[in-house]
Length: 226
Image (cartoon, rainbow, N blue to C red; front, side, top):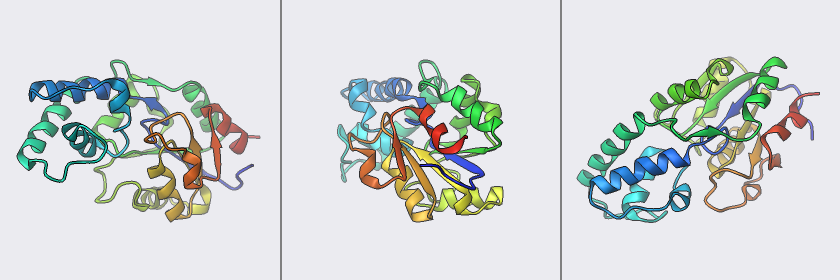
């Protein structure tokens, strides 16, 4: 399919543009080791990524995707501080862009699209990662999981982008790898592209009804560039 009359493309970050799981796993295991708790493999931690730092830390402390309702709040706050402090100093050690991301983003930018990021990652981490991966100049606006009271799958961040960039929802496309991205887009009445390779908790992204699904980031050009 071809999207028409689009001006703004909103991207998720982790699992869509970048594979940050290796650095996140190191930070999580550093936190757990510091607290003298069992650590986990990167493959397991990948399934916990996508809902922001607080949920990731709670899942790690719970040792599973389902968060323990009885987590000690003092332990959680201590763990979160350890995690965030370490991760802030090790944001882009082994984090990389997925295949074809830089070239595709540049093609979209050159075609006249305005590019934005809406992620559940804390806002302060976005710019350093983009700088480390030499993507800074491509994006006009960033929103983190703590930029607004609501975060994905709530549609508010996507609607905020529309407001800030003075465009309608019909003029936007959301691109993401997670059900949080697609659910937010659907509720905001924004068309969406689902990507199969990221962090979606082992679920098929197509279940959440994006307008189109691709395995390769470069394929989004087929829907947006003549």
